[in-house]
Length: 123
Image (tube, rainbow, N blue to C red; front, side):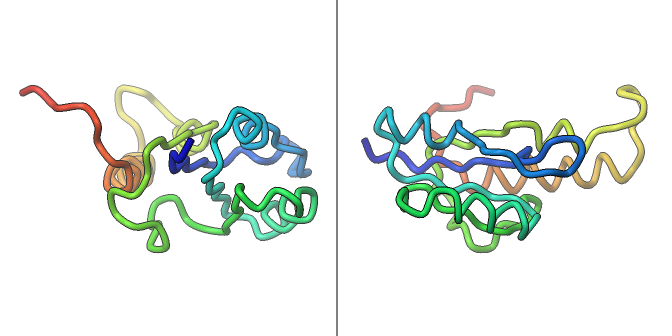
């Protein structure tokens, strides 16, 4: 099955220690062979690359999810967020700080540009 899957962060525990992220490899076993996982930490990316050197269908990249210049526009079939947006949001949900609005807005816009739309929008 050729589906371009893009994974976003939470590849760490709260203590900052890396752990083995199984979701990409569980999906690989189910036939999803073209996956990219993005995290801002080189330590996490290097750790995950070294743990799964035999599974080249899952690519690990260091990157900023608010500015994914290495990912082509409309090249992603599925964007899989495992907590990245949750980590950006704090403060009041009715009046979030400007930083929250800016960061979460940039992230949503960036993902929207990368994801290929298969559903027609109705206005």
